[in-house]
Length: 180
Image (cartoon, rainbow, N blue to C red; front, side, top):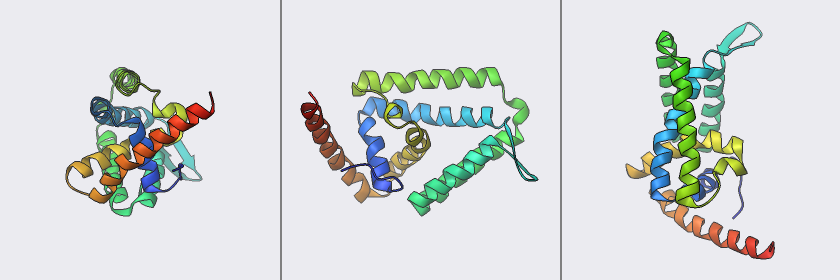
């Protein structure tokens, strides 16, 4: 049951393995959107140029995240793209209201909670320690899927994930015994 990049079930399984404690899942659901939005606010000030085309780093990352999310699952990827575009639009229309100091404080506090959650409630290291890029890109998508699961969508996938987690736990215990 190894990790397969660009496979929705594999991506969600990896993430769910680190976030199956209910308290940690709630922490994650609150602070991932906070980290995403404050990151978007801060990175919107970083200009990029591609030939004569000018965008900011937030817009570039929106394109990258959207392409990846659509590749994993078209309907949910399109929904995620809409959410990212809406966030971009809000940030661009109200850029004068973006306070760097407040964004940095919220960003920092959110990350503190992201480390407290796994350490205290999951009794393990955070997912980003094992795969930082995958964790950062998948965290917002995982939160969106959790909301979709709660609303009744993708129920067969939702039912598969706990079984996958059990298998991953067995593999982890076996690997720990082998490497003792």
